[in-house]
Length: 449
Image (cartoon, rainbow, N blue to C red; front, side):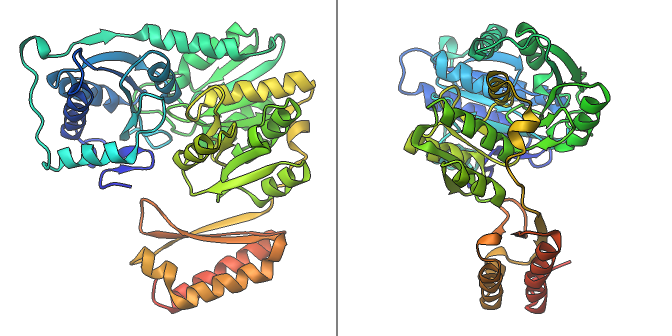
């Protein structure tokens, strides 16, 4: 990760950590960088979520891009995966999404997408950061070299048509609940499910610029749980602010997180002969129950560092077709280059409709192991992680858990935290072992208040 950009873009509180000047500088560099070796103007597409500050950043990016000679195509309010789709299918040099995903409304972010629809490579991001820090000079475009903007809502409509085309069956008479998190999916998701003849029930689809992710969406799944049960719906899907993740709810109100979605879809794709390499790609945070269930069904798995960026890289390198995170970032590489919440919904629906089964029936075969995660604030992450006595107790816990559990101790990528996670057969075993590690860290003087 760089100085400004993390695994999911340049993110922070709007006009505090991420300012309009930053956005202008990002635009200035990208407009020059993608146009410097071309005879014609480079083409860059921008989408944004429903945060009030997204308009401010959109205009700043446009000013920077056009001042450097780029033509800018505006998708307006749309999802991150739609930007990825438009970039890779319509010959754009790169894409930009203005969103802080599941973060509160006062945060925002700038996500960069390459011409293949994937997250931008580290080398290019570091060059952007060098420009922000004044290490690179970029000329201004003049006269007819100056870029222009194009209203490109048609690109968003083509993405909607693409999603509809992926469905193999009608959803007629199926009652589907959608929680749009007052975010990017608020218009798109309902359009897709209505076109597929579902009886669509939608909540949190009235964004006002400050209510995105507020007590709604995939990070507040209890809202959709209650809505599905109270209204007798067959299934429900909750998205985050930019709709690149999805958490499902079955008709009984049970939460079907990313791990269970990967199990359901992995098993279905295997039966269809469409699970490349017979492998599902996960991060190290996936539940032990997922791995045991995949093994039971004759599937293999690979683990990456936390972040859908790393999942996507592994899938691309090995030509795998399914991967994702427990949080609901699921990638179906046959159809998309990044996580797509609405696409994930369609793939879950395909499995249910094709197998004539409820999501409850398909997901209940996966046993979820109790899991406890403790975030410990430390003075220095590396020192705490590599402390001799901490390493010793972690190894002792791992040995005592054996194949019936696991411990994972890792550094936070964005905060001064060590994350201690234990999975085991009971909540009590999880608690005892997490406390065992935390007490050693405390005794070593590694924890700060």
